[in-house]
Image 1: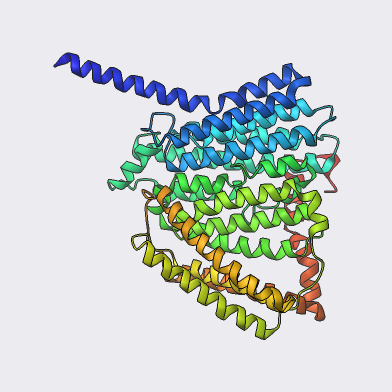
Image 2: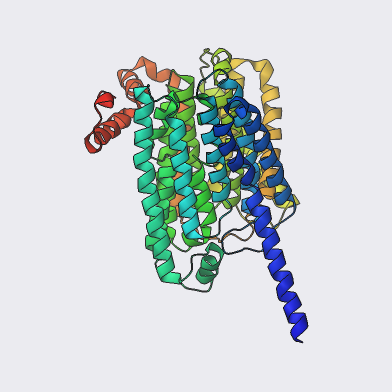
Length: 511
C-alpha cells in the first residue's frame, strides 16, 4: 500500500513541477530580451522581436493545452488563458512596431528593454495565484511603465505625466497591499483560489472593506473618474507606449475585478460603486472625446469611456461581456494608436445632421434587431446565463445611432447599414456565448433595479447628446459646454495643481 501512495505522490509532484516550468517559460523569453537589449544594443530590435514572438508562441501553447491545477504561486484557468494570449500577442506586435518606430533613436535598445520587462511583468501578473505576488507584479508593471513614460526626460510634459502616474500608482499599490493583508487576516490564506473557496463556504470576514479597497485600486489603474487625468497626459510619450498600455495595463483594473470576482460578488456595495463610477466615467469620457482636436487625446478619452463601460459590465455581474469587451477593446484601441498617424487623414470632417425621423427609424430598427438577436440567443443557447436587460438597451441604441447616421448621410447606404447591424448583432450574440464559457465558474449576484435604471438613463442621455450635438452650437450654453469639455472640465488642471503642491517641481510648475 505504501509504494502506490509514494508513486502517486511522486507523480503529483512531477506534474506540479511540469506546470510550474510551463508557467515560468511564458515570461522567460521577454525577461531575457530585457537583459540582452542592454548588452547587445545593436541587435536589440531583432532580439526583442524574436523573443517576444517566442513568448507569445509559448503562451498560446500553454493556453491551448487546457487548464491546469492551481499551485501556490500560479493559476492557469480560462481567464488566465485569455489574458496570456491577449497580452503576449499585443506585446509582440507592439514591440515589433516599436523597433521600427524608434529606428535611429539613440535610446532604442533601452526602450525595448523596458518594454520587454513590462511585458514580462504583465504576463506574470495575469497568471499569479498569490495575493502578495499579485501586489508585487502590480508594482513592477507600474515601475517599468514609468521608465517607458520617461523615454524623453527632456520633455517637461512627459516628465510631469510620469510623476502623476507615479503618485496614482503608489496609491493603488498601497490599497492593493492593504486589501491583501485584510483578506489574509479574515481567511488565513494568501492563495486566491483558496480565498474563493473560503467565501463560497460562507466566510465573509473582512470582505466589504477589502472589496472597496480593491475597487478603488481598479479605478486608479483603469483611469476612472476622478483619477483619469494621468492617461491623457501620457500622450506626449512615444506612440508604442500608448498602444502597449492596452496589453493588460490600462485594463488591468478590469482584470483585477474579474480575478477577484468572488470577493466583489460577496460585497455588493463595491460592485455598486464600480457601476456608478463607471457609468459616470463613460459619459464624461465620451463627451470630452467628441471635442478633442488631437487624435491621440481623443483616443485617450475614448479609452477612459470604454474602461468606464467595462466597470459597468463588471458591476452588473456581466462577467462574460466584460471579458469580451476587454479583449475586443484592447485589440481595437491598440491598432488605433498604432495607426494614429494615418487616422488624421481618414477622419471625415463632414457633420451629419440627424433629423427626428431618422432617429425614430433608427430606434425602431435598432430595437427590432436587438430583440431578434436576443430571441435567437435564447433559442439556440437556452442555457446561457441571463444578461442584464440594460445591455440589450445599449446594443439597440448603438445600432439605432449607426442606422440613423446612414439614413441622414446617404439613403443608398442605409440598407447596407441595416445588413451590417444584423451581422454585428449576430456576431455579438455568438461571442457572448463563447465568453460565458470562460467565466462559467464566476460568482453571480442579484443586480438591484435602481442600479440598472440609473445605467439606462445615463446611456439614453449619451445617445441623445450624441444625436443632437450638432444643434448645440446655435446656443450660448452649447458653446460654453464645448469650451469646458475641450478642457476636460478643468479636472486635469486641478489634478496638476494638487500634484505640484504635493510634489513641487520647478520645471513643471506651469503644467
